[in-house]
Image (tube, rainbow, N blue to C red; front, side, top):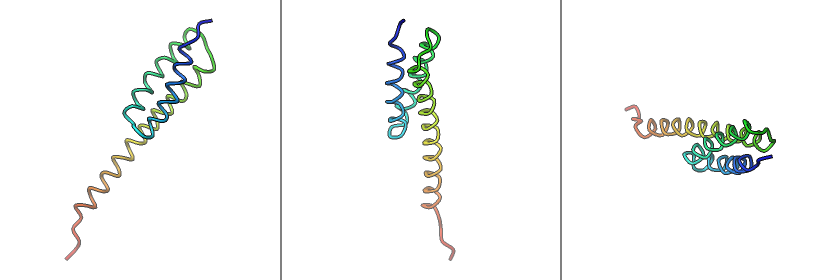
Length: 88
């Protein structure tokens, strides 16, 4: 029973979910690394930590994508607001 990648993948998934909210680029990087580690572990041996880590890492990447979309929408709205000219 070789363990290690599942624990590392799970810990990285917790880090990635936190970073996905506050520092999205780090959340994306940690999420991808965590997914790779969890998949490698799942190919060796299926453990609940690897499965949980994989799910949390995928959730972190989804949060990063949502965060990016919301940032672009807010940037567009603020840009439109700043360039708004009232009717004369």
